[in-house]
Length: 77
Image 1 (cartoon, rainbow, N blue to C red):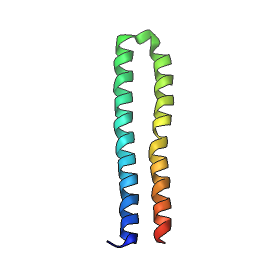
Image 2 (image 1 turned 90 degrees about the horizontal axis):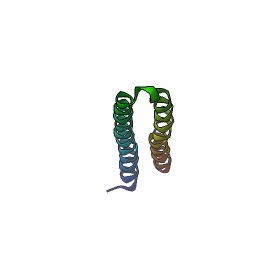
Image 3 (image 1 turned 180 degrees about the horizontal axis):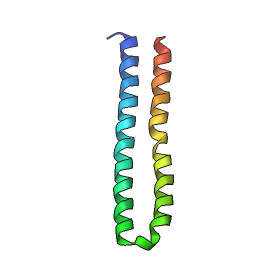
């Protein structure tokens, strides 16, 4: 296998798994927040704030994965 193909494959894996992990994480965060809001409706404002902060931190994962993919692609070009 040519080394440029390996870099492209690595970039694709980094971006793909990063997006997959973030999607699964955000869905679990949303499900847990909705369940908590259903159990304790009086705490919905605090839970919503915590949910959005956690989602923001989870969204960093695909951004880092895309950065890694760009670094790998810069090795090819």
